[in-house]
Image (tube, rainbow, N blue to C red; front, side):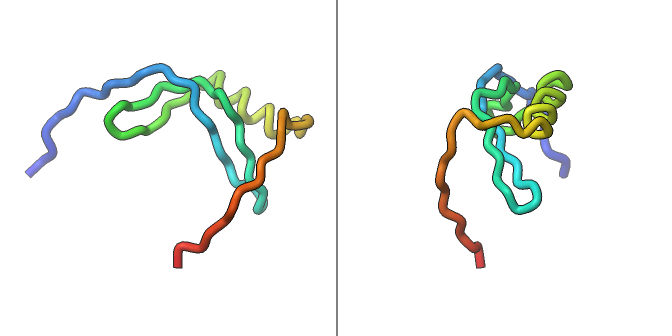
Amino acid sequence: MSEPYREEKLVEQLVTYTLVKDGQLFVVENVPARVDVETGEQYFSPQTVERLQRILREKRPPARFMQTPVYEFA
């Protein structure tokens, strides 16, 4: 049986984008995204993706540093 059709409900929000690259965690706050209110899935415009890539590529000094614990699932 196929899943019944559901209409996506997207809202504009500022989200926190995270990326792990070469073992280093990068966090970018206040990123504009369209967020599915039911699933939480985030959608970024092409311009936002380009800006995120530029921010991480330029390696400019961050606004702040944070410390975070890392856990193993196993």
